[in-house]
Each structure stands twice: as C-alpha cells, then as structure tokens.
Amino acid sequence: MRITEPMDLKEFERQYRLAQHIEKREQEIIKPLDVSSNYISIKEYAGILNISRSSVYALCAGGALEGAIKAGGLWRIPVKNRSDST
Image 1: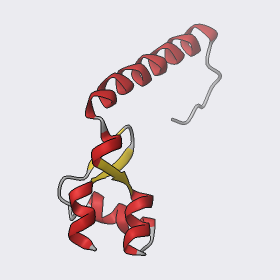
Image 2: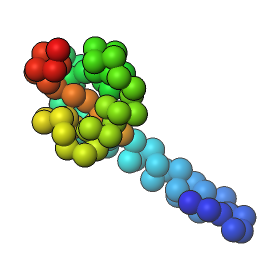
Image 3: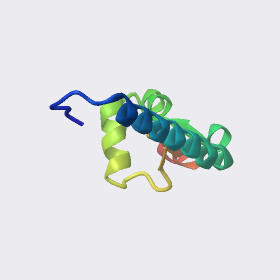
C-alpha cells in the first residue's frame, strides 16, 4: 500500500490491530494442517531435484505438483511427490 499523506495515530492503531488479528487467524488455520511431517519446502524439493527454487515455485504456482499447498504464504509439497520425482 502506498501512503500519500501522513496517517493519524488512531488509523495506525486500527491497521496495526487488524494486522495482528490476521496473523493470529493465519496461525490458527495453519497449525491444524501439520505441514511439517507430510510436506517439504520448496528449498528441500529443489535440492532433491537439483533445480532452482524459482523453478519449483513456478511448478507449484502452475499446478504441476499435485497436492502442493500454500500455507502461511509458503508453498509446501507433499512427500509423495518427492519419491515420484527421484
């Protein structure tokens, strides 16, 4: 967001509280997914295939990796895809 004029303190506090609320809700949503045990990161997947992270990101964004999800702004790839590709 581009700010063209100074923000008053009341508006700043409102936006800050809103940002905190959004972050809290994201964490509540992400925790039940338990992505740590069944999914790997783009960096890990790229290392396994010896390709760039940007290539893996493009595969995820394009839907080429079945089951890849975006949790908390980060892509996660199911472990089953790891063994399929190696």
